[in-house]
Amino acid sequence: MPAIVSRRSSRLRLSGRGLLGAAVALLFASAPASAQTSTYEQLQTFSGLLSQIRLNYVDSVTTAHLVRGAIDGMLGSLDPHSYFLGGEDAGRLEAWRAGRLAATGIEVEEAEGVITVSSVYPRSPAANAGVAPGDRIVAIDDSTVAGLSGPKVQTLLIGEKGTRVRIKLERGSRLEPETVSVRVRNDDIRPVSVTVARTLPGDIGYVRLVEFLPESAREVQRAIDHVVHGHQGRLILDLRGNPGGAVIAAVEIASLFFPKGQVVFRVRGRRHDIAHDYLTEHDGDYKDLQLIVLIDEHSASASEALTGSLQDHDRALVLGRRSFGKALMQMPFPVPPNNDAVWLTVGYILTPNGRLIQRRYAGLTKEQYYDFAGRTGAAADTANVYHTDGGRPIRGGGGIEPDSVLPSPAALPVWWVAAADSGYLTTVADSVAGSLAAPMTQDVWASSPAEWRTRLMPPLLTRARSRLGIRGDVDSAAQARMARALASRVAEVRWGVDADDDLRLRSDADIAAALTLFPKAAALLHNGGH
Image (cartoon, rainbow, N blue to C red; front, side, top):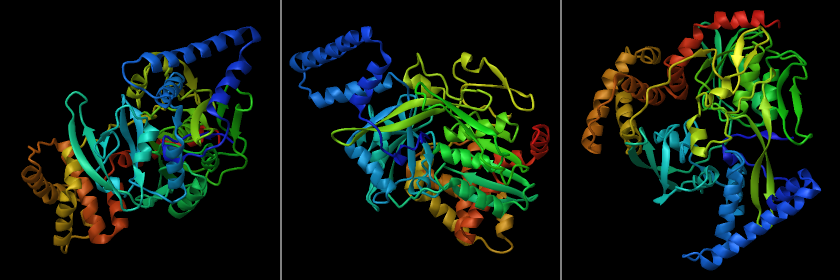
């Protein structure tokens, strides 16, 4: 069955027909007989152009180079998410999936014309090095990534366990960027869906879902059973930074919260066998649970399909920032004879009430398309007004707009990555962790943001200024975010991993906002008619 493709291109499954065979078959199958001559003429034009370039171009170029450029151009003319991988690169990604290669924990996408970090796996080498979503990758191992596709760059970020990759990053303004280089180790990083499950004050459950995998629904169900007491409690489902995954996993997770027979989402495509309505097959164990969903600009694909369904049916209150805006169904096709592979978009994902989450890409360059990530995009994308089951007006296009929009976190300076790579962050945090004494407890430390800044920021800024040669001028919002990150390291060193998670949850502004809005979530559940 087709899958909603995650932007994590390292999760490829390769099957289907060849590129040239598929392209010609689609062209001729859809074209009337009278148009076939014109198609052949176009192919003759391409062949003639190829010959002229090889014979007359000022520099010597290979046929392989020209054909690869033509392939990339052909796919780029379709949509921003169809792409081609050579056999060697596809094999490396398959080897990572099979556990034969390690990874840095970085996932990338093409954004604003450059390779951009889309997500960082929790507690991965990249996370420990200070790499963050939104960082732009300029070079890997001193070789520029300019002109490389996102999937190609992804293959450069995996390798043998223990090997290191040197990454040059940009952060901040595109016109006046700050740059830094960091060495990140490849380590065993195996995909899991639920990374945090806790019971928050007020007997409110919290589950963070970072990816949609085949076992995701079981992981989510086990997590909810652990953190929520009874099937009529309250839950925060955190989809921030979740790039998507398998369509069946999204349906199965939605089924936990809906009654039997509820439409989760619909798929529509040019091929009749692609069109399908996904419905729940049984009553969910948590159909009476009060639910709040957190999203942000890095929530994409299956995350958006699930969120849109919950929003359409008034089943959850959605908080955060506008989602990425990707709702294309893609399928992989192998390309013989070299085990190459192409991913082609074959369908659109629609929410139950007919909203198209996908941002507009026709008439836009790839740079323009990615520049609208997390924003509405073209005005026409949100011109149509739809209504939830309870009658609330909502708009389609350009991603999912939250019911309650929350401010974005403060940006970190680029030298933060250099400080992490140099070990300054852990040095400062570990020193403070070793100096903590009674009456300081885990609970007191987790509740003392003023103490974090007083103890952690002066030694960090002093060290960064003297060792990195920077001014270290940081506004109060960025300082608060840095102090929180250092404080979580202190908690982990002093009291363990659970203390780290506890501090991060307590000090998360989005979660704090969610805790105050459960009366609205309860009202949606009541008015939705479940």
